[in-house]
Image (cartoon, rainbow, N blue to C red):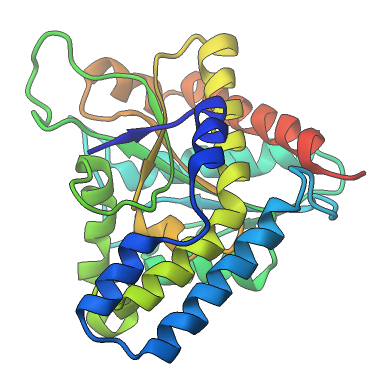
Length: 298
């Protein structure tokens, strides 16, 4: 199931949402976790949500660092069209975003997860952002529809903005395709053990910590969507919530941008063109500026 979000709907749901995930606690009881552990996690969850509830949308910091992540790379080509690979398109767009951000945003620090055609493990991408205390993590990708490069009428097109989702079951192709990159890595089972739902205490704590940045992630996603649709004339599937692993461990607001369907011949041509890449980069940078203006104290 895909979860489509808007800031307004999210705010309404938030009023009804309880502080503690009782479903997860019930699951913990069913697998016989000791009572002191349950009490600690419940207290931690309640305290953390109370702190978040007292915070305004504007945090007390100056927006100054963004991490730009060009999806895939090296031995992981990502999706493909008739003549191009996702890894090359995302890198070209990411480099344009970096150059334009430096030009248009004063005192901004931009960090690339990769600047060449190299394979960067998913946990390293978020680790780069975390170690540099980034204020925003932007992961750039290309979408692909199930029919592949087969030429059919009314093929999928447009952008899609993904924020990290709490619900990991029955997710759509975008999350499955992006998360599949972990299997290329050595010792992936040990590195991503915490990504499973087998440990309900990990699930509760992860959900609670990610809630701190969820509101800002949705805000940035909506600003991106506005840029792509209103100012750039692109079609969009909107802002959706999915369990994309590259966003799961990012300790800051984070959005994955599916810039277009690379297996659609028209979209592939646009994604590989200088004009298309420049338009996409401009939309991203304009959204960054609008986002910074909304959340920065200076």
